Image (cartoon, rainbow, N blue to C red; front, side, top):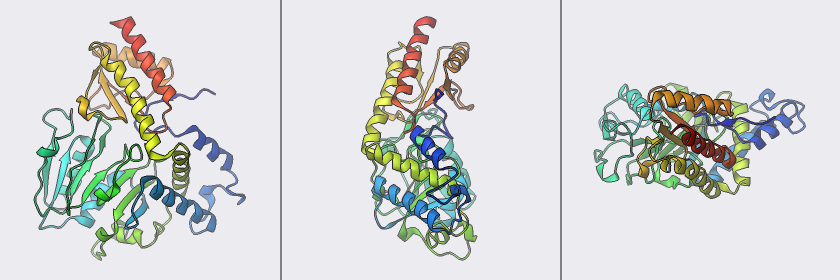
Length: 360
């Protein structure tokens, strides 16, 4: 069976090797005569899966020993609330940088829990770019600075992060975690829904510096980082199947040469499609400014809505899935996360060149 050219924004493509291994082990995991999703989360068999996922993530991202890795539920959206609940000082407030819809949603939830200020925003210019570092301003004693590292809807991505010194920098990395090398020690907390680069939907990774984990008896038990850090993310039944698949994706990433090699491949894949845009003499127009372009989500428009509809229909006929832009901005979007093969990106670039030649 030929695999679809899957450019969905999320849930997104998983490596074929991972799916085949999971298929092979589906009914009998490591001689247990049970599927992973049938194992007790307290069993030795599942403990090995859990610890393998955590260990591989620490290795691949070079996460320092003074950081905890948590496997939580509720998606990145629950973190919009958990972060201020655990880290927001009511007197000091917190600072949010707006670069798209998801940072707006994080801001909206945080405002329900305490005083929040906007440290920078590119909303007025249509979120075409990431703010200049010199334009970002936060209060000297703010509780933390929050940003979204990659913006799936608008196709922008941070290339360099603000240096916040003693103030914790918090990043929603749902759509570009593990896609490029980063210095984890620059952040107080990183969080990411798994369904783009790490695995299937259902598990959320939180990487948090240990000194930020505080005991607070006023918090609901399940919404406290201290609860999950103190129980190795096993306070209640975790999403065992999702964590198992996450461990397989991390194993695949290691076998591919690690994050540095994946980053190089992602740059090459993105270049194929951006070249098709840039060399089209305006037939395709990228949404993001060139210095803010994402290597994960490539957003572009065609000259008319009619041509856009025709492009998407003909692309679908050729087996390309998920190329429609987000409903809030329209146009087209190609999400080329880690598991999207180079060959699929080449096929899309070739299709774009062919479509432009026929219709311009």
